[in-house]
Image 1 (cartoon, one colour):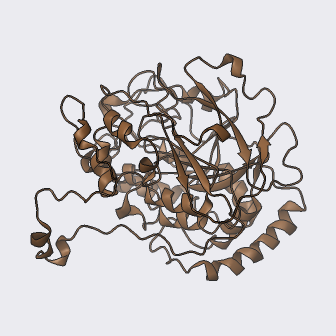
Image 2 (cartoon, rainbow, N blue to C red; image 1 turned 180 degrees about the vertical axis):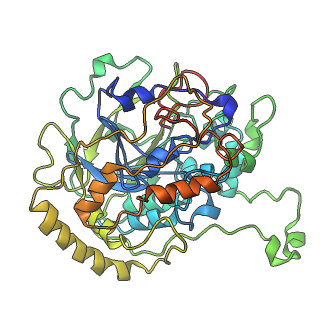
Image 3 (spheres, one colour; image 1 turned 45 degrees about the vertical axis):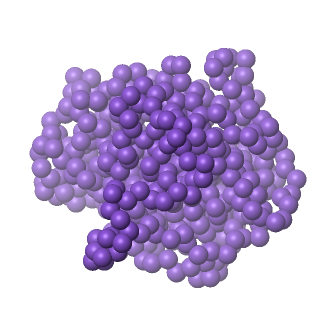
Length: 490
């Protein structure tokens, strides 16, 4: 887990992992920058991290009853975007951070979808979404966001690509530690078709028991952004250190004058006092890195939604706005059996076909093959959809099995947060079962001899190589930074 040693604290996730406690409601999440990344690595395609708590994997599309959900894990760092997932235990000081950076291969898979989803989830905000809400109030609350927003560095380009392609009704994110909403108009000329209401399974949410500080919101009444809520006095210890290096520091008093808030978000990139003429005289090697351009795609006719409602919530702490109860109108086309109660997680036919199409690419080693474009992938995906229909849909094998198994031992209190040995890498039985179901190779497996050989080449545990990655049992991650942070799913 990427966290300085002085901020390490065990949360309560180990109690859910061990079975001592069970999540009362079905929980679905994506990974961020302060998770137990070695545990999530085992579940690259998605899986249960504990009973009733489901991780979507590096990228995924899944169904909860009739609700179709797309997810993208990680935060944006452009210099790692085209790398493979080549981090393996024991992690070095760079790998413990790069492991949670979003990758192009996972984004590429989501960009092959050609049918409508209802909800999109990312940890990082989609790049540019801050300008579609009350950005003046956001910058008053979080002054250090302003410089990055002006220069286009705030948020994830990958999440923006996926949101532009999938155009879900709702997009949920976290990471920036404040409640914020926005409305993004995609500009489609066609009218979206009629929608049907999604009602959570009976007993899944009891509005009468929700604390007063939470809001109940109906999507049809959410055309105007919610006022952002933040704490000016908070020091964001949980922001990624790379973010801290790339974000302008706020004034010491934590305030920002109204004069600093431009009326037009299309403002020039700050030059740090270097004139454009002088910058143009520098060699090409001194030029600012150019972010990757958006993938060139033809927008699918079946994706018709025109408006995406964005919502980010605050940290899960007392007196913070971290919970929202919502009604969501469906815009996807559910299967005939999707409304069967109680709702369960089921695999998505189109997504499984995409997984099989890319299954020959090893996501762990270099180089990742270049993007060959939609025209290349589409006939392959269509052929794989026929395979999924014949082998999984018709045989009724589309339900996500509730097959959680512990791989690492549970939290060992005597060992504490400063172990003397490296954590162990495990082959997760859920990933084994998923690969067997799709008849694809499991790249996330290795012999014990291979794993021991890697450990021999690593520096001793605690020698600076693994910032927060230690611990012999589950519970060392997902704990949050500081006291009382709970499971730490941010």
